[in-house]
Amino acid sequence: MRKFTSAALFAAAIIVGACSPQTFTMNVEMRSPSESGVDLSGKSASVVYVDDGKDSEFCRGFSDAFAKTLEEDYFGGQQAIGVYKVDYREGADYSCADTLKNLSVDTDGDVVFLVHPHFSQMTLSEVYPSALSSADSAYIVYAKMPFTLNMYVYDAPAGGGKVQEFKGTSIVKQPVFSPEVVDEKKLNEKVWPMLAPQGETTGERAAQKFLSTWKNEQYTMFYFDSPQAWNTGGQAAYEYKWAKAIKAWMTLLDTNDLQKRSCAEYNIAVACYMLGDYDLATKWLDQSDTDAKTVLSDGLRKRINLRKVK
Image (cartoon, rainbow, N blue to C red; front, side, top):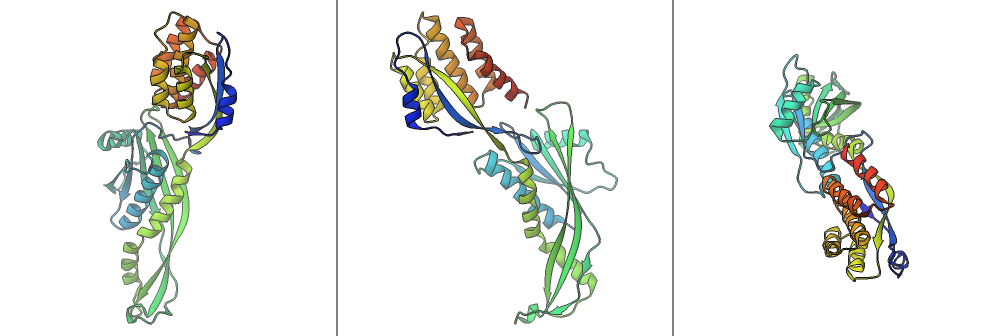
């Protein structure tokens, strides 16, 4: 999630009042599911590619770049997504839910991306003398290979055993240099090990469909003029330091004033929600409702429940 507001807005929202609660509002960009509907927030993930022994370099390059692009979005750039390969088996159904479930267990990935490309017949251009002076690169030929990329995605935490299928088509065009005019068979053997960069480019492009989208939302929290912990918690929230805010608001719970205690518990529920702990947010909101339900309770509960089912 991302936050944007201003210190002036926060200061203006803190209205020194008497005994009734005041509120301040923050604008926050909340992470939402990707264009594909897949959401990796709070989940582990793995990428598995089908290796037929010929397109290994393309698949490895694709999978590594695909995983890295997702890691930058969901895991702060840390290496968190495992990349695995399975050997191609004739007649195997890689879209089968049981296959994906087994891979989820074997790779310890809540979400599994299974990548299976299909390359069409390679076509070669004429052989041309190259502009390079090196004797090893005296000739150049262009290999063109149309392909279809099938991707099957299984999200275990989402439940239901559903497998989502995505498909795309493109063409690999790879220049091949040689010291002499070589026949098609030798060119065919030479081009496949060169395709890792082409796979990386394709993997980065394919990952865009699975990156987070962002939605601007407003969140309101409570404030009283005393004690000081109300201001400390509010300032920490403004600085996006939710753990620090929780610590400040926790000191306000030892009171017989049910309204103040409920407001502190509500604020803690918001902070837990921001930290992605929706179960704990629910528990604090339940306690807030028990003490003295606030006017903001129902709205927060709806947001929590929506996040729980994603």
